[in-house]
Amino acid sequence: MTIFDLAAILRRINKCIALVVGFGILATSGYIVTDIVLRKLGMSLGGSDEISGYIMAGVASWGMSFGLTELAHVRIDVIRLRLMPFWRSGLDVFSILVLAAVVSLIAIQAWPVLEKTMARDSHANTPLETPLWVPQLIWFSGWLWFAVTAVILTALAAICLGRQQYKAVADVSGIGSELDEISK
Image 1 (cartoon, rainbow, N blue to C red):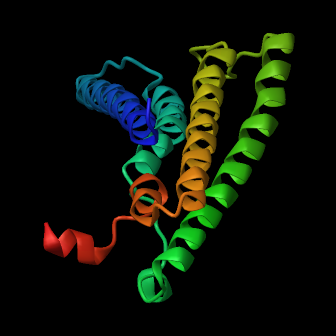
Image 2: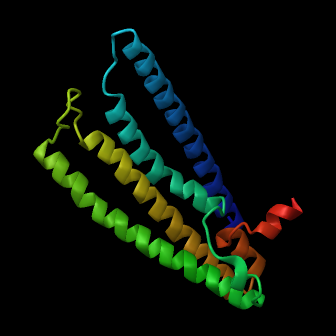
């Protein structure tokens, strides 16, 4: 298995995750619209605000790894594009290394939140009385997957930099610049 195979596998997994997340957003939107229509008729499904909040937390944590593998994260291109390939690749590796470190720290710090919720058997203070471990598990696992994805891509980018494969570094951890978009 090559570096590109592993990066491609991560991209495919994250595309599938993005589809699931997208269907979750569509289902939530349908639920909200149905609730709004029913309210106009004097009825309500209830809980649409609570459920949509849980869905948005899950979407945010799970969706970020898709953005990472699709090179959709934001960086300022002004200086980066003017650098020689070695330095540009070095900045790409540094950027994803910092991202992986921050996301890993967030995932590590998210675990005690979930652990405490499960230990206390906490429920939402709402009519739905949702066991909070359910949405928090989805939220935490999204952060954990984002951290795993970022760490793997960091390792792949560092290996490519060490081998002086600068195009490969950009393919694994670079950004989609405006120049790339124009040339498509």
